[in-house]
Image (cartoon, rainbow, N blue to C red):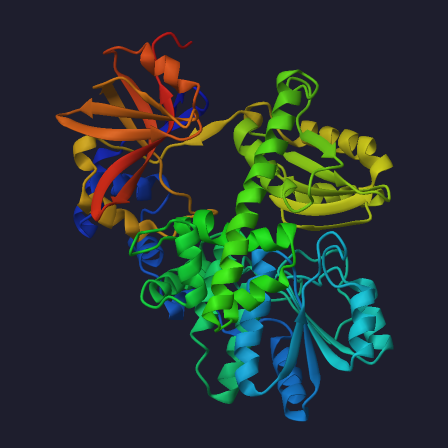
Length: 579
């Protein structure tokens, strides 16, 4: 059961405090009460379920790679190619998942003496995925085996061309299968309909990791340590669900990088201004991975592979500087596009009273950035967002982000007659279509959303996990919170409900967008920061001594060698003068 409370931005769903159950769990596992309540709110009630969540296990969480359809066949063909000295080409993708997948395959096969090279498409020039042109060029250059990573499940024509030219094609991918499979030598994808591998949520880097794991097992060798770092980066960056096997490998990868940092990882940490001794998945997702992604979004993603697996420190630092500059440029472009669309919404040109999907297109919007802007629009307005880059040859290349109540992949599948290409998942997808078909696609999606989604589903909602008081937010609380990590998709960072706070001094407005307050309750004073919520400043200025409630993350602030437990506010309720 949960109660509803209207905050300044979100409708809060506040869990009911089940005192007896919470105290029993807290005692049994020696956990802070708010952490115990979080577990119960999320449905972890029986001991077996709790143990499986709190304590990852290789034996329980990790399926054997041979269970994956065609994995054995793929491994045998790669080993044969190495034995014969054949030329092998990795066909990757330009995002972090594709770059880390390509890098992982290289670091695994180069030590085995493979004649191997890689190709990453340029987003603007080559488009997404394996193309017929790439297959033809590979054949001309003497490659007899192509292995795709993080793409290929829709490469129907390239697969036929490879067969015609006598090139064996192995597809490794994680995106959903369409109506059929490409006619390739092997198709390794846990999401192919006839694959019995028990875990379906691996990133592309996770799939090629399983293939390489099986190959190394066949040879009786240990996997290269670098593979775990690459698996961590790609898995977190691709925002796949951090449950089950992904949860195990991300935990394993974090333990590895917190003991051994590669030169490239040290540069990424420095660029991201990450000073913590112990990194979390949140640090990877927000500070580390976007730098690599910037290469594929704006420049040549090949530099990302050389950066990740290279040994030349000067070259790594040089590419690191490029990554930092590109990521800063990406942020500015993202902000500008978001501001442009927000202005259209504020002016009523995109009418959210009548339109259930945010649908917009621009010729100057880089294709590599619009997915990030769509994510921001989704989190800001609580409804699906689809943005398009308009090309000079009359195409619209789009990126979609959706809410759990509306399966975007299924919607695009139902609209395939309007599209040239599409792929992805229920919550995120990519597509291309003739620009002249945009109005018809918009109309069809609006109709489907109206049939499948209620008005309440389109409200901005915030699910809170537990009640907490300021005295409970101690170092012990933070240690217990680590049991719930890594945080990410389907294992989000917990949000706590803290009641009856009062201000102890006037709020501060930082950089014109962030609001910082000092709050007091139950004999404790703590700082709270509301990032990107400038509208709260005047309201706090008028609050006086009246109490208010917050929905907040609880975080550690590492500064000048000191560690303090602080609040990152998400929303506030019961402000003076608010309706």
